[in-house]
Image (cartoon, rainbow, N blue to C red):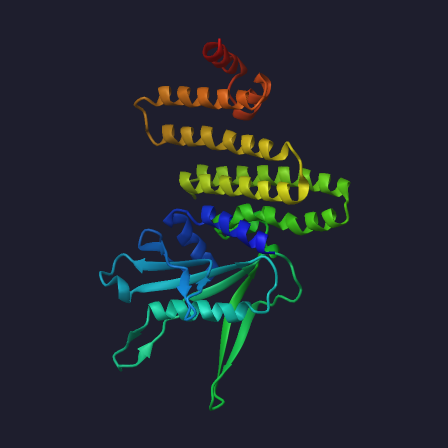
Length: 329
């Protein structure tokens, strides 16, 4: 479980290194907000807190949204906290309270009545792997010495209930590549049973799903729903998830190479194409030619033949042969 959490954290760094445009849409959907991306500014904030024991308490993702139209940013800000869990954990609600309290201390101030106030962020936990014991919210009853009670509650997103189409519809774009993580449980079960045929079957499923998710990401880029940097992050996440599944469960020597070639073939031509459409005219033809040369020679160096290079990159086979002849002869 620790290894899965570490890998998930690494991938989230790619996915949440997204444009403001994409992050605002994500938070709107996750927390039922209605921010206009042109009217707010969003930043990823501190997620590490030093405890009294000098140990570090680490949360996953904290965000701060400012209203651009208001000069007094500090009085018109909202904080959000997303936490990611691969499996059910009955200590999660305690940790969420700790994270919220620590973030609240950072933002504490006095109101007009001279009473100190802690501002907890809006919080949500995303659970990835299906478990019937996971409820729609996490609850913690805080009981004070005089028996007064306060119910602390955090909403839950059950990721397994969403497919890629749902995530696109709800504009939760950074979460799309994590559809691949849904295969982990089945692969783990097949590996424990030493079911080689099932693992091979799931390897094909993983390859096809990676391509489907990459193509959907490209379509979002084409539609200006995401920027080039977001598209790149999503493809990197797809590559990393395939690498994780392959090295821990599948062990297919061709899988990672095929997916890397596929994602590169989508990203490079599409970013070039977008550049042309945006009016980058001076020197663009030379830039495209140079990029084509690099792509062809790199793929040739990986041991791929002319026909395969042409098929993956959509570069005419005669052009592929011309590049190889010119630069290697």
